[in-house]
Image (cartoon, rainbow, N blue to C red; front, side, top):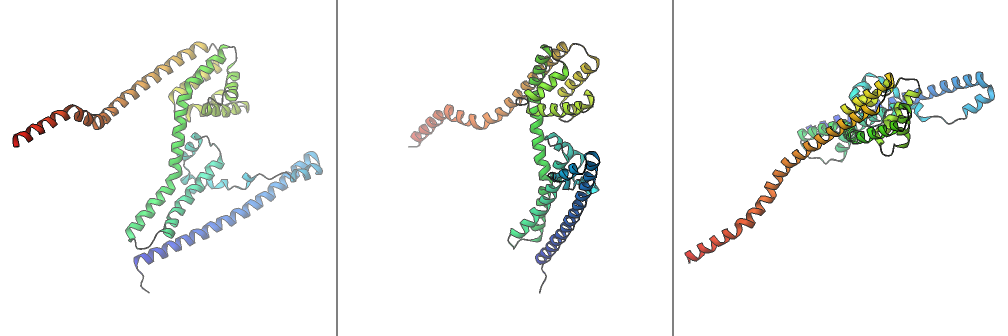
Amino acid sequence: MTLTPGTLTAISLALLALGLLIAAGTLVVSELRRARSGQAIGKAIQQGTVALAAGSADATSALDQPYKPDADLPFHWLDSKLGRALVADEDRNLIDQCGLNSRRAQLIFLVTRILLALLLPTLTFVLWGEGQTRGVVLSVFAALFVIGFMGPKWVLGRIAASRRMAVARELPLFVDLLRLLQGVGLSLDQSLQIMATDFAHVLPVLGYELTLANRQYTQGRTREHSLQRLATLHRNENLRSLVGLLVQVDRHGGAVQEPMRVFSDRLREHRRSEMKERIGKITVKMTAVMVTTLLPALMIVTAGPGVIAIFRSLGTVIK
């Protein structure tokens, strides 16, 4: 049997897939054992704690409660060296910007990235017909590996960019609502609570972030620490300035109406300048479109009759 380069490539890929399957099976078995032991230990600790607190009857009823599925998830993968390499701080920040600030979302991102990076080349090898050269096969496999590995991050980047744009659109309404609530005599805490609960349908992104900030504030954090995520997560300078203003008002007190009015005017002026800049860019882009589409039609309409008359005169002279 002659071993051609294509045959050697197929054998090597088959051995690689077999090794990956064996490694995945080993990890699954170890995780199942770990989950079972952790579940048994957790139930024993829970039984002992409840028995000490409320007696053996309450302990028996606590054991009958439904088991939470998140307890079996291998969250320790995220803290390993491989997990920190595959889900870096930038990726975790992107997940937070998408509104998925949980370790479960980070674990799903890790598993999705690994599976896509391995499955896309494998499926292509299985479904792709023979007869391709070794260089083409390796190039396609490398491209599919990169797409599978970077695809989840690209999707998260698009979602995070759309949410940043939504924050920029919601910020003027956020300032106006805050001024309105402060004007009727509500405190800063009451205003933020009402905006997070009653105006979440008009402020989907900022309302969600305010809900998290209010939850942290009720758990004992200061207003500055609770609003730190809102100030730095979406990389909006105007939002950062607004959070700084709210922190200063909460720390030192005083009237907030005048500073909010000045900030609102500055924000509207900034948005007006951005709109002018966009209009200027659109004008430049439309010039190229008009030159390529409108100018030929204009030349045909204006110069067409003259050209036709010239051709008719030349035809008469030649005859």
